[in-house]
Image (cartoon, rainbow, N blue to C red; front, side, top):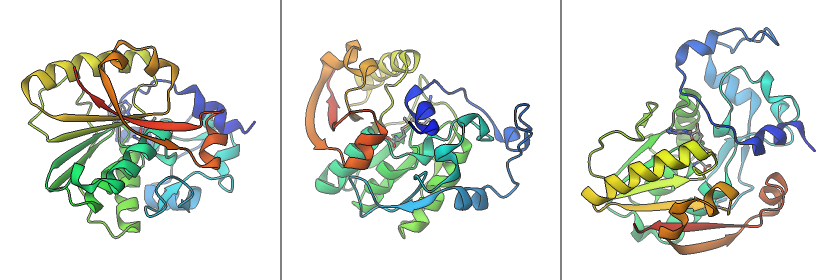
Length: 251
Ligand SMILES: C[S@@+](CC[C@H](N)C(=O)[O-])C[C@H]1O[C@@H](n2cnc3c(N)ncnc32)[C@H](O)[C@@H]1O
């Protein structure tokens, strides 16, 4: 199995980092991230439409990219989750493109945006305001590049950890594949419960049925709104997961 996929499926939790790591030297490799991150992303990703939303082109790792095969430890910053279009995000973006009224004239916050596809789908479908959030600063750059790739006006991307904080009112919050880690799932649920009890925000969660998700107590508070069969390539990358769903959070 591809080495990269070992990382891909490990789905370890990610600590918040800052820009200083861009120039950090990694002891195992002495590898430095080039100062021009955009060029680095261009060189190490490929534009792909091989997913559930082919109308959104994304810079991703593909089997023709170096880091698909090389050890993830060689990646010179935090785990490059933004270089994968996760099944949960694919389902949410597909759902938004299929039912644009869900976002039309609404303010949308995409938390854990990764490559930014769900937020891009919201922007394409007529949301009045779109903001993406991801604690990985490289994701911020990748999201902006993906916006430009799709002729979508870039929207703000925040890289602070907002989970657990006081947020303004959003009409819709998107969470694509964010229930991969027990600690993160716990903090998300606690925070969502509090947030929803004050603001009547719609929360959509995309997930292909990962163990952390279906065994979590939040699962009892969800209503399935859509289910999609995953494309062959996504199935291969996700060890047998064949479908991905969109859930509405109803505490
Ligand atoms: C599995 S990826 C999903 C990406 C995207 N939503 C998708 O479905 O393609 C999870 C993303 O969440 C981000 N993340 C992890 N913890 C976070 C947090 N506390 N706040 C915001 N983003 C976070 C990671 O950097 C990563 O990009």
